[in-house]
Image (cartoon, rainbow, N blue to C red):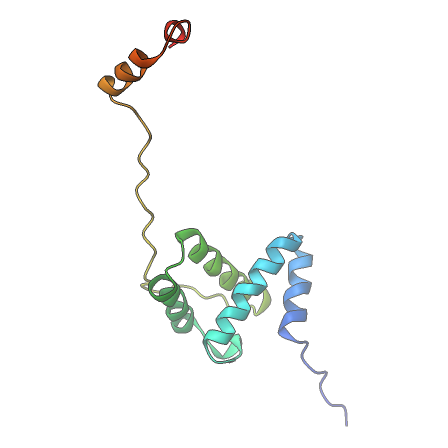
Length: 131
């Protein structure tokens, strides 16, 4: 007699939870981009049918084949963690060994004493006095 109410679309559920938690529109758009990318990567399977193995495969693929930056991979991970924990109410738990992007070493731009002395020697007065 009474048929169960149809489940709202994933996009509608996602938007409702994002607005409930007062996320910015930019964050909402960015997270939805990565969620859609994840779904398309797995050939349009619903996230409810997938789990940690699929998330691990997606993030590893981003690092190895797409060669994204570490921050981009972290953003994709955050979007998927939000989807599973807040929207689907199925927290991911341990994702396992994900291939992580290596952040390049940041070397500070420091001159040696000899380089600094050489640059100061090239200056003319009154700039040499200031240096």
